[in-house]
Length: 250
Image 1 (spheres, rainbow, N blue to C red):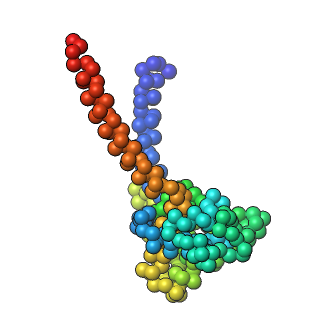
Image 2: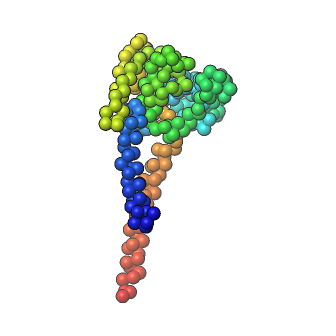
Image 3: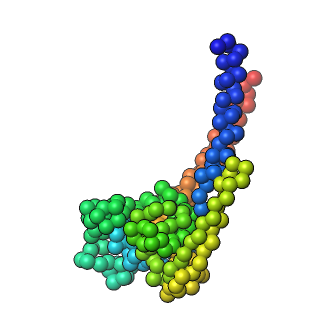
């Protein structure tokens, strides 16, 4: 291969890959994620999410990097934590662990349920918000449930009594090398909550899981603003001092 041909190959090969990438992405695109309407400053929402997490998620999942007493940052007293969020003899200073063993998890679900301490940082709030709202009945799966965001997921729908049962029909069409999927949802049975109530509950749960991933995020951001302001003032003073020292130097 001549030097000229080599240079042409080096230039156009990455270009061809970049042009082909959107086609591949379009063909493999999954369920579109909804934006999670979370607010890390909404303490009431965070408290509600913590309650939902303790009552529904901790049955199978743990949060080994989170301690119950850290919920005091959300305005909860030690008595409130004990009365509403502690089960099976747990103490306020304990981490949020589950009684399910890894072996039992693999036996029941095929894989051990993951720890949820930093799941929001790993998956993102939009993914979690959409995932928890897109379970549907699937008689072909081992648990009887499936998920539009996470196909063939091993987790059953832990919140189905609240949301009710849904069915999903997916229609795939091919056009111009792109695979387009059309999702048709059907409500099979009603839950204890209507759609608005359930979406709000999931919003609060995701809000809490985002907070749990970094409880000190709010403090860190406030301190960061103060530090940047201090550095800005220091820069102005340092620049004024520099002008004073060098004003007679030519």
